[in-house]
Length: 263
Image (cartoon, rainbow, N blue to C red; front, side):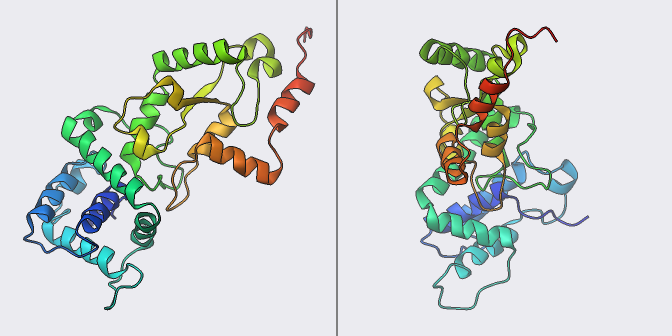
């Protein structure tokens, strides 16, 4: 059995170490490398068999990964080491959104130090069918999904939305389950974080930090693409406006609803 490929979570932490070091590589004997090695070996991501492999996320391997980050950064004067596409995408993410990615690393570190991330079981949809996760990693996705699925939090958000709008409609496409399905759809909606994963991770989730979405829009917010974050409802709405689809869901529900049907 070979040591598993580096995950986004591990790359976030390694990338943050390099960025905090001025985009310079770190040597094996550096205390920060040894501390990161211990942290990576403890993450609740890989199987126990993988973590028991000789050299799994050893200080040597961590040091080599910092070299990948340092030498593959655009503008580096020397030769670049060979590394995989996930590392290159993570370098791009740190260049484009340094503060946000550093915050994501800090949230992972906080979740591990507090023990919270050890208590949350794996969640459906934290990775897609190809194993791809959001660029911030599987653990922050797991954390956010667990909160979105909290039944008490969901019930409070639905109550708030009904009190404000009078009806439950998707905040992206306006789809109304009750209009489309009658009593069967009454009270049904899904909730999604309006804040990015690096914010939704360590902070407590407030009702104003959640949006009510239909199942389709929720899925599209969560759909993973290599090197990208989850989409916020506002970002998804912009995508739908570009495609000319905003308002379709509610219009379809309005035209197809048959409240007096006895079928």
